Length: 434
Image (cartoon, rainbow, N blue to C red; front, side):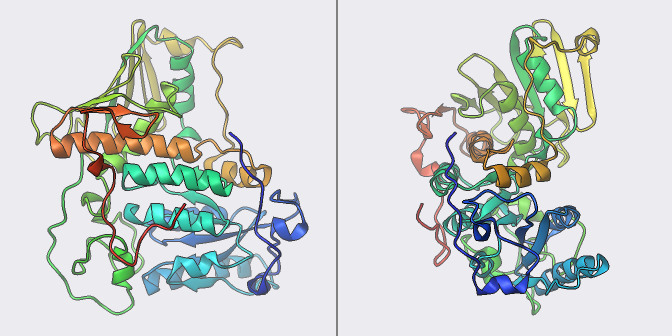
């Protein structure tokens, strides 16, 4: 895939805030970071996920964290202090501080920031990615990268047009035994593949939470952003620093439920095994019971069915099973086994399929910023995998058998309503033009 290598201009006045971070463009490298330079990184959304990312990036010697952003002042200031304490402990006397913003657009205006790590609620992802593309920033965006199918299509177009390096936070491609399982499947060790089962929970429902008093320090209107206006509730945005997953994931206004949250992890591996990173299914069959929330079937042109089993309906995914004419492989995080056991005992040869070996999901993104090569979970991979999740949800929500044309990013004739591809957005939180 061709990627442009244009970068932002010379360092502006904001660069004086962090003299240790040198933008590759300032070195005249045309988008290629020098081995001795440090990449300036900003973080958007400082909840549980991005605080985890932050601690990881603070450990990289070729990175300097320059800014954090969150609509909750307590989380925002806690993240800022975490960064400054880390650099103070490391003895970086010339470091002049980490900026803290309420609005990510202010962060994106800084010329000394090369990349942004986005881990806001799902309904914000597409808008923030498009804004980052317009600002010329490389992007690490948590999965699922979009709330709608149309957003997924626009995300791919925006990243390609801007020449940015985009990594989806589907880290299962970079860790655990998933690559091994996919290599065995694609090398034909299971014979003819017929079915893949994915065990994750089901779709989200419309939010019916009552209103609660809003304490000072949270920009609630901006948290809602493009979603419909509604009163504050602590389940959606728990105040301050906390260590649990906020329950906005349960509601359609903000997320597709476990189908997209955990589903994006596991359906992404199914896509990988089927070599469908630039394509997708052709049909989605809902279960007989419209209230089941599991049991949907995702059908590919080669005849393979991916079945959403949701055995325990737990938030934690229950793994993936690849079924073929010669046996099965079960894989989950830190777990892999085959039936018969001999399948995995016999090592792959040079003639078998060997996939790209990531150096680690974060590290892979950083190295690709420097090389301008696509990372292991680039924009189309993330977009195609989330479309699978969105289609499955649509089949559940509307109780209809859907027919899909992955080449057009549209329903095939008579196979669905194109109005389902997107949602209305609340002004002024509208998507920027691609």
